Length: 470
Image (cartoon, rainbow, N blue to C red):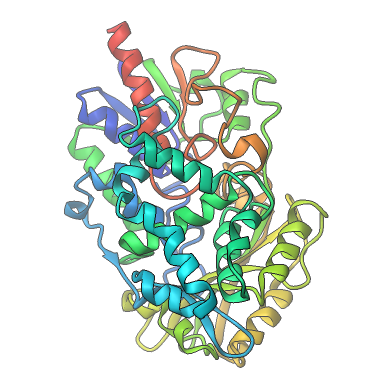
């Protein structure tokens, strides 16, 4: 009998398996797709030689993850590549705000009236970032806070809506860039703890950047898998689990799945019926005949580029998708251009380009023209560079990854108390009604992103169970 079986070979499932294997437990992973990866995959979606990331592409949380930093992933081929700028947010007048490794450079891009306010906002936390991120991403009840004073101070700054936090800024560059940071998790700007979301992304950039993985996000999943196999773990692909009887006997079962899928497989009935999924996304992967022709020069050097004319436009786009049930007329977009730092992703002189916008859950329309018209506002002539495109709406995304219910790539709405307490209002989020069954997906704290911390935290709960029953 195995000690543990993990269902789902996304970053969280693989991290949970690695953490258990490192402690001497026998582990096997079962993945429905033909390859490992979950939200961290790389595929040729358009033309031969163009390697795209179907979901996650830039990894500010990955490089800052306490779980990943404790593992020898570089030994297994993971190499982080940093663009000159982690992120840029261009404006219609050809200028841009930037999120740089340098706090001073970032603050200067906001203008003289907001530079000091930004420095004062991040200064208390940046010098204690490693401790803060471990405390922030390990909660709840998986580890005692190492610096409870800084964590409490961060909570006071971040728990209110981001619209409260941005009142300290006078001008649009700072307000707009920060609104875009919050929108990465598809949260309405007025939601609880959205200030913390924006702060985490900003601090992550200053601490270690927003890199891409050389060769694509698949490198993260492949490194975790190779390390797991060296530890004696087994990985089975093309193995869809429809019920618990499909799995071999084990002392514990760990699910890197949506709560909906776990309830169906394990027979938990309506246990997760109050869990809410968020808006979907419409994703386009491009093969380009050259770099994106951004008007704003900083955008040409950035790995990630946020698209939204101002904070009001970003807020309207989020409301349209999350509350009004319609696709936005001028969508907020997150784009990634790996080619500015990784020439292996496309043939010489060519580029891959990654872009998505928010749409209502389960939306069935085609947002291609709307997204490209929005891009053309900031990069005139963009369409002339397009060699091929691969589009995916909510249905296609959910078909590729069953965790993306309704096209929700975060596996759950970041809204209300569910921002902090998910998938249920409990201090034991990785536990389920059955003492030997656990959940470790992005539906559990600390939530969405390729960081492995949900798997790391869940593994702690699992090995405590295994020791008690050993």
